[in-house]
Length: 285
Image (cartoon, rainbow, N blue to C red):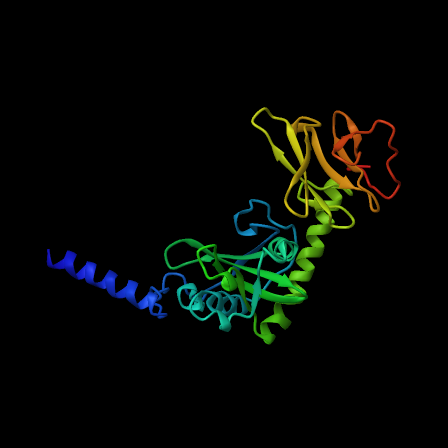
């Protein structure tokens, strides 16, 4: 009974402290890295939600373990419960209501850096994500949602110190370049990820349906879905590609080859008369 009352009292104190603008951070000793004995394997993943992607970038890029430890521990030192009462200490704010395209840009720029190594008892790993905005590197630290004050709503980031910028930028640039080369080899000009028209007015996304078909959805910059269609089976799908100066979208698959959907002013429809430009590279061509 005494233990329950004590626990309840602690929770009340914590709640009151948070409301007053204070913050408590639970010990992060389980996450913090003091040292890594021996070697490590480094892995990189790229794109939106990169931390949860199963696709590793094929690269020979390596990183110094001491640099990784410093980067990881700095990221773990930022306390969201503290920062939400001290927003002025954050380096960057992006309000998706005002600049949705800017948030999409920084969200897709994520590179997740993972170190796999032998711990005291077994193999363990730690990972940290870095984002890029206007050629600067950041950690994502906080989201202030709809229940916040109107002028506080947005996504907040902390900028990496200059020495970390200098160390990690060339490494991440090489990882991006290796990822681009790998995808070009596998898909040519095509992609299975979200891709924008030349003027950023529309974007196309691919998802696999329970029926086994690929669904292509085209959405405008206001996130209003304009058109959708199912051109082929997911097992045959080889990606999509916009033309460079118009709204023609090409779909490539192993069974139907390359087909084009053109914008008629209201939606996208199959255009059997379209001729694919020479600059679009077919997969395995």
